[in-house]
Length: 464
Image (cartoon, rainbow, N blue to C red; front, side, top):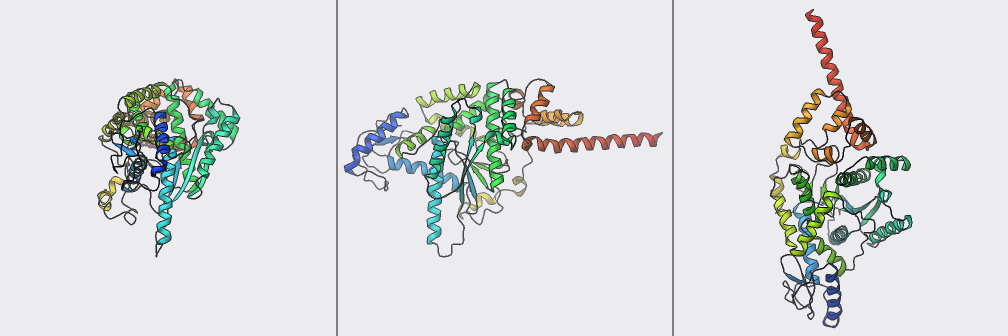
């Protein structure tokens, strides 16, 4: 992506942010500087959409756009994803997962603009019948595992607060949750259990995947406790492309389609991905052009397989950024699961008429999925994993056997420590939000086994 010299745009496609001829040079310099930061240069000298002659930014596919059209292009992708997939309804309260990076920063800005537009429409409406959706922001504080000085961590978190508070209206609440809180409400006990569990994982990739699972669990906890209906993530096409390759290498091909769709309702609180069609470089450049402040001081570097894949994707991006889109589009051809769409119930009243047929085709039986999900990562079980689970249920003598059987093969080999005794201790450290479900299953299994044994004893007594 880049910029090139030209005069002011003046085309029909530009809006109020477009430069005039008096400020064209300043805008051109800013766009060029921003483009250099993301390492892409373009030879385009005019906007390919509005036809103006402003500094042009090259987007995926080689089309040069002026700054205003470039912004409108990304905002259009975001709005299309939200509206065509019914991600946000007027009655919804949406929790935006905010990391401080460019992707979540753009998502925060765009959802705020959509909220402002909805409020404006509501104010001028005569009936004011439909409510306006609410927006909350959540930041998961993982600094307990960070080696940076405490004052730097506190300063970074304060920057996160200031970024959100800079949006004077629209955000109803800012939630900052410590990662260790999913283990225990008591700070010291939660921190001890988190550190001990992480230290028991010997594989770098498994450790990073475990923290990603905990991050999702923390977001779910925040959403459930505060009444949010949806969780919005800032996962963009570049991040999803990395996940596609990583999952393939880890042998997670069966569950992969579940992670690359716009909508994911397998969780207690559904998750949506409105930036799935936007590249990381585009989002970074938009932050530069619009002076959107970001905060990435607390980011943790990738390790193991995830780090290798990220490096590979970076090289692909330098050669041709459209390859990230190609990877994502290829993954999208895999058959999604039934939980990768919202059911029609409750949605027709708020959907535009052109979109209603899409949801009316959803069969009511399909809307209630029966997939068995991994205890930790939530991946749906493949046929071989289901067979192993059924076999374990019949012969399991200990609760730990059911725990391990409810983990997918990837979590089993990369996260669980080797040895039954170590596994028992590891599961004793895990959050109750995970193990509580297995305790219920285990108790039901023990009760059923006792009933069968009692029945067999009675049958033997009658026979004698």
